Amino acid sequence: MTVVPLVDEGLGNSAYLVDLDDGRALVVDVSVDLRASTAAVERRGLTVAFAADTHLHADFLSGARRLAASQGSEILASAAGHREFGHRGLRDGDEVDLGGLRLRALGTPGHTHEHLSYLLLDGAHPVGVFTGGSLIVGAAARTDLVSPDRTETLARAQYASLRRLMNLPDDVAVWPTHGAGSFCSAPPGADRVSTIGRERATNPLLQVASEDAFVKDLLGSLGSFPPYFLRLPEINRRGPAVFDYAPSLRPVDASALRSMDVELVDVRPTDDFAAGHIPGALSIPLRPAFASWLGWLAADDRPLIVVRRPDQDAEEIAWQAAKIGYNLVGELNGGMDAWGGQTVRTRLIGPGDVGGAILDVRQDSEFHAGHLPHAQHIELGSLADRADEVRREPLVVMCGHGERAMSAASLLERAGHQDLAVLTGGAEDWAVATGHRLEAG
Image 1: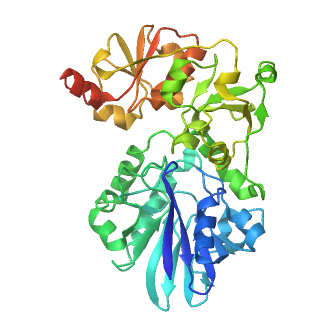
Image 2: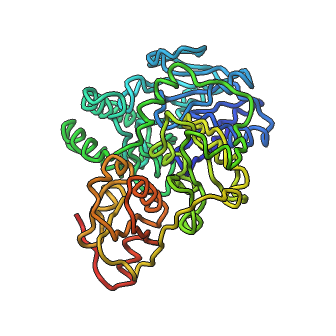
Image 3: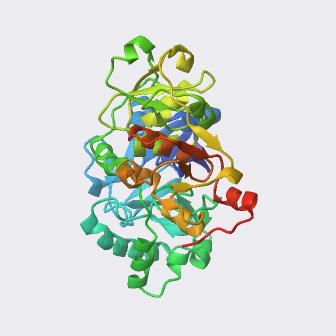
């Protein structure tokens, strides 16, 4: 029996492939982008017999239905999720015979109301537990994705769920879905897996003195999240569409594009976007976090057309969008070289050249950990609705490295702001370049 984590660095999540040592496999919490799991299965010559979901995911579309259609996999999921497609609905204590191993469902509500963890047993011995969005490395996942009026109730359920998991032996492996980089409230850190004993000793939320203290600490740690998190659980409940083809980007000629009512998403690196871009284009550079920012910033009710460099992988762009339920209708045929129309430039500056008004678009936790004196702070995710609050130009826009700042600049340009510059670096780079100290809080 081998457990293989399949890490999506961009979404901050891990799916898991369990080689059952008989030519079959179990996968847990796999997204609709099956490329990594398919490669792992094919390398081992396996068939996916079971596809389990720990909860109704908010940050990606489940790939369980695709596996059921392509490999005949049996879908395992919580009966309390009321999914509208074929699956085996499990309740607390139910067990699934994996052929020598067993999978026991543990009711662990909190992150969602119908959340299950799955305890993997070899005979009577618990080997590990797939904890989804319940117990995660160094924390527990957020409880505010169902509805505001249920957030505290779910936080109290999360407290009880974590206490229940602490009844497992110390050597039981912990295989969570959410990890560093996830907007489901995973803390930073390189570790994706853990053990019950390690979490018991080091997880701050397991050190609190009472349920009330746990709720206060958990809810106090919640940051913002992309709006598509509120849409995907229902899509996953009804059942994501099943398709047997790779998503692609249809070429659209510049002449046709000029007459179309679409949103342009420019995925080129910040240097390329700064050197010249189509007026009104939204900059979301292609990188591991592309999907999250696409779902946060791009319209979900308009066709999206991509502008990319020739060396950027069109299939990767399409898959990143597909796993959060976005359908990119095409791309500018020939890229910027074929545009032939008006372009806009955005100035780039180094850390030693910052002056005047500053807008910092990092997340709250990043800003409060250290920022430039007198910097205005508006998170990138809320900037489109708050552009009228931004100080007048000239303005330097900054984040941690420059990608989010360029996205912010493109949003501000849409809103009529001019004389913008983007910092090619972050707060620490400025402190080193100038010898000045950052402010905290």
